[in-house]
Every structure is written in structure tokens, then in C-alpha cells.
Amino acid sequence: MQHRRGLALIALLALAGGWMSAAHADRDDDDRRRPAVPQLHHARNDSGVASTISTNGFIDTRNPFFRPLGTNERSCFTCHQPQDGWTIVPKSLRERFEQTRGTDPVFRVVDGANSPHADVSTYRAREKSYSMLLSKGLIRVGLPIPATAEFELVAVDDPYGFASAAELSLFRRPLATTNLRFLSTVMWDGRETLRDATSTLCIFNTTTCFAPLGVDLATQSSDAVVTHA
Image 1 (cartoon, helix red, strand yellow):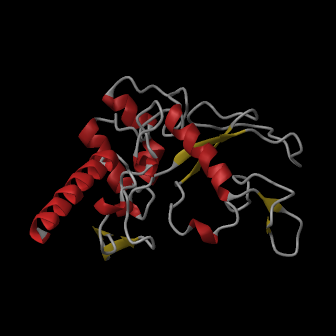
Image 2 (cartoon, helix red, strand yellow):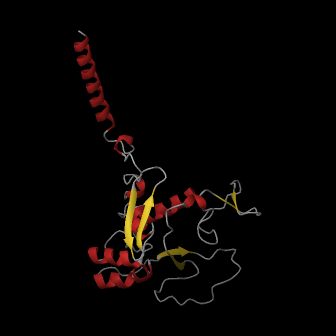
Image 3 (cartoon, rainbow, N blue to C red):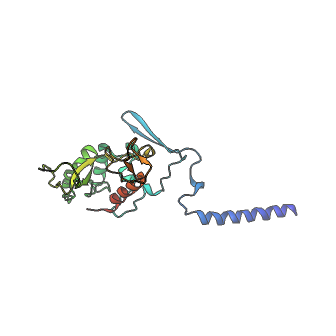
């Protein structure tokens, strides 16, 4: 009798386990599928091997960072590659360009080209239009001169024929997406972080305070993945 009860209990547990597995099989944050040990990512480079490790104990590549959630096929991962120190470098970009003939999602005229009006109709045209990205790993940031600026633009010499006082073309490498908790601002002058008088993230001994990094980074991420031109 006790043996039968034991078998019945096992059967019930098996049925319950099967139901629970079906109910949770599609959950992206299912802990049962995560590694039991810290997950590392190794990438060889000219100096040896670079490794990435998450303090959470795993690197979940199913989360939104790695997914193309916008409309131009880009994800955060497009411009933040682990083998390149979580940014992008010319060597890897050239490989992606050759493999896709310049159609990889990183190559979008909105910020990947030297000008948002660049000709990308042919392979050679794309190679020329994305030259700053291919040769230096730089993304174009278009910013207007603020109305309160203590200077004025008196002349423009843009070899790509676009920049003006309405929108300057500034070029930078994508910020490495690691250890961001140690930053209080984005960019050396803080222009990429929104000012917020109620924030406690302030420059030492000043009243210059900023909104949390997530606010600005979310805006940047949205612009990068939804814009085509």
C-alpha cells in the first residue's frame, strides 16, 4: 500500500512538473535555463585574450540588448561587440562590410555614414560613404549649435557637404557598455546627459546635476534602432 502511494505521488509530481514546464517554457528569464556557473565571453586580440564576465553570474543573450527591437534591424549589440571591448573597431567593421557588402545593420546613413544624405546605392558608394566608420570606427552625431553658445559659426569646410550651424557633424566611437555604474555623465562635457535639478547625481562641489544615465542611453538606443535615413 505504501509502495502504491509512493508511485501515485511520483506520478502527480511528474504531471505537475510537466505542467509547470509548459507554462514557463517560453519565459525569457527562466532561471532553470541559465548557466549554474559564471558565463564568460573570450575574444582573442593582438595582445592575447580579452574576457567579459557578468557579476550576475551569467550573460543572458536573450535580453533586449541583443535583439533588433526597432525598424532598421539594429540592436544595441550591433554597435557594442564583446570582442571589441563592447564597442566597435575598424578591423571588425571592415570584416562585416566585406561579408555583407556594406548592408550589415551597423551601416545605416542616419549615423553610420559621413552624411545622412550620402549615396549608398552601390558597393563602392557605400565604401566611400561609410569611410569614417570603416577607417576609424566612428559614428556621426548631428548636433545644432545651442542658441546660448558663446561663439558663432562663420565658415564651414565639410568634405561631405552637410554640416552647418543647424547641425554640426561630430564623430565619436560608441561608448563601451560596461561598468556604466561608475559614470555620472556621458561624453566629456556631459552634453549627452540630461540636466535634472532634482537629481542627486551632481558634479562635486557644484549644482550641476544630471538625470540618470538610463534616461539618455534609452533615447540614444531608440534613435539608433528606429531611424533609416
